[in-house]
Amino acid sequence: MDRQQAQGRTLRTLMITQVLGGVGLAAGATVGSLLAERISGRTDLAGLGGTFQTLGSAALALPIAALAHRAGRRPSLTMAYVVAALGALGIIAAAALSSFALFLLASAALGSATAANSAARYAAADLALPQRRGRDLSLVVWVTTLGSVLGPNLAGPAEPIARTLGIDVLAGPFAISAACLVLGAIVMTIWLRPDPLLLSRELSPQESAPHKGSISRGWAAIRRHRAAAHGVTIMALAHVVMVAVMVMTPLHLVHGEASLAVVGFVISGHILGMFAFAPIFGLALDRFGAPVVALVGGAILMLAAITAGMSSAGFSVRLTVALFLLGLGWSAAFVSGSTLLVGPLTVAERPGGQGLADLLMGLTAAAGGALAGVVVQHWGYAWLAHLALIGAIAITVIAAMTHDCRRPA
Image 1 (tube, rainbow, N blue to C red):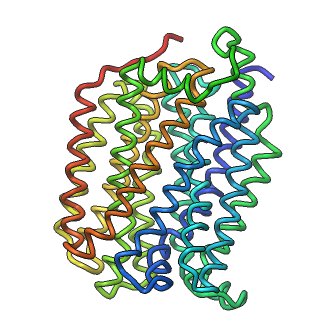
Image 2: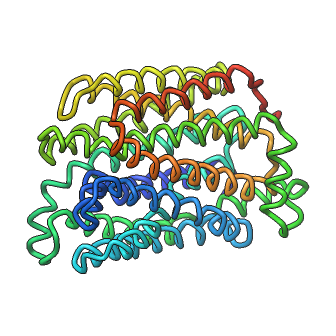
Image 3: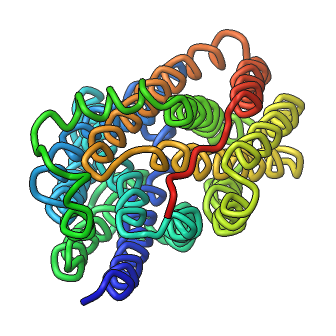
């Protein structure tokens, strides 16, 4: 199997698992903060489920990268989906036991699916030619649309499933999550052959020699390449802005008497913005360069924060548009930041550098999610949007300072 055929098979497999992983993550996104509020009995703790999910994603980013460095993408991504499925089952158990500690621990395990979905975009770039890297990477991000938009709308249909299983109605979507994540692990194990990272090493033996110290090599590479460092920073800022606002929006809606169906609709629009337009950003990236796309992403996030800050509690067209723009701006920053990171790194440096990038993204977003609940509790949703605006402005400044760095074909 030549490089082009292997890349085609890799993309097809990743696109299938991204759909399943998207459903697995998004099915519970609609009710996660509501379930946290019910179990804990406190509004200021409602954002901790999302925070711990993000922390779990960050904590698992390095083990996933280390396993990929040693054994390839297939075992590392399969492991990530299995851990996430166990997390979804743990959340169901936490609801049954009314255990907030178990809920937080299980949410952290569920975050492994986020780490897997993030690592999948790097797997798409392993065999991609430099002039098509943005397109191939964005395709894997884009296909997540199918699962992620469907997932939040399963909150309503999950109710009869929950009653049949005898579990809390708000835990019903997590049963769907568990099933999809297990299926994703099975597909990954069977179809991701040949392993794209291992094959890329065979094709570029001069770049992939030592197999030790992957994390330290990645850190050294990021410090050495300014474009890679800027890419990591852009992704981290975009992630904290997106997570902080998104995780508290369901509460902002429900506190204004919006139904779960309405919450699902608004979050679906947000996720549509996150993934549906990624190929457009990928094509723009290959044509105009990553810094330009990152600048556009920062500008869109600024508009999203301003619009969200003007939205009252409950359902409104303004809030729906704000959440869509929030996802759209994140998509542009995420795709461009990922490409800035991957571009200057060698095959040997990529797993460690990518793991460190996802770790930083997760930690900053977790901090943002935790603070979001406190800000909303004491000062309100509008203040949260104003703080997000500061992060969006920082993205535009960094993008304007960044020079594109593409490795020659």
